[in-house]
Amino acid sequence: MRIPPLYRRPAWQRFFAGAVIGGVTSWLIFLYMFGVQQEKQITTLKAQQKTIHELKIKNAVWEHDLNKLNDETEQGLSIQDVKVTITNGETYGLDKLSVAEAEDALIEDLKSLIAKNVDTVFKGKMLLKKSIENKILEINKKRYALEVSEILFYSNMYIEIKLKRL
Image (cartoon, rainbow, N blue to C red; front, side, top):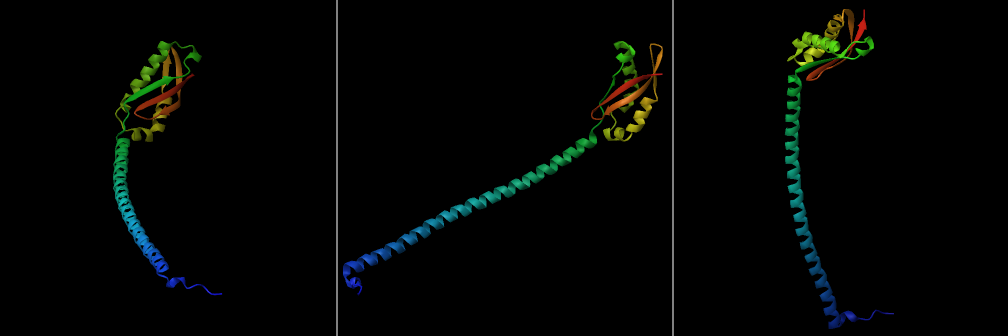
């Protein structure tokens, strides 16, 4: 059995030549289109990488400025107001006026802390606590010792105090 010699016929030769030329032409068109597409893709990626790099630099600058500003704010934080609350005045039968007068007296003693740096006052919190607890208040001709239950430090300093009858 033999393969027929069709390759010698001119019609078949034109068909094969056309198929080869069409294959080469389509391959060249494909390579051109793929190259153009890849160039666009590379250009887009380079632009995105440049944008990402610029944004990272801006972000680093913003973070540095924000951290610097936070540090300056934290260092410059000072006490602006002192608030004192007596929590158990009702247990001893004290009226609100007497409790308010006692709170005002304590606030007057602590006015020297206003405009001081929060860090400085916080470092001396034990001394502050002991100085408050060593104070004895006289309310309605009765003597009361003070016990500090809570101190909060921020721009406003809050102190909660419990009374103990002597």
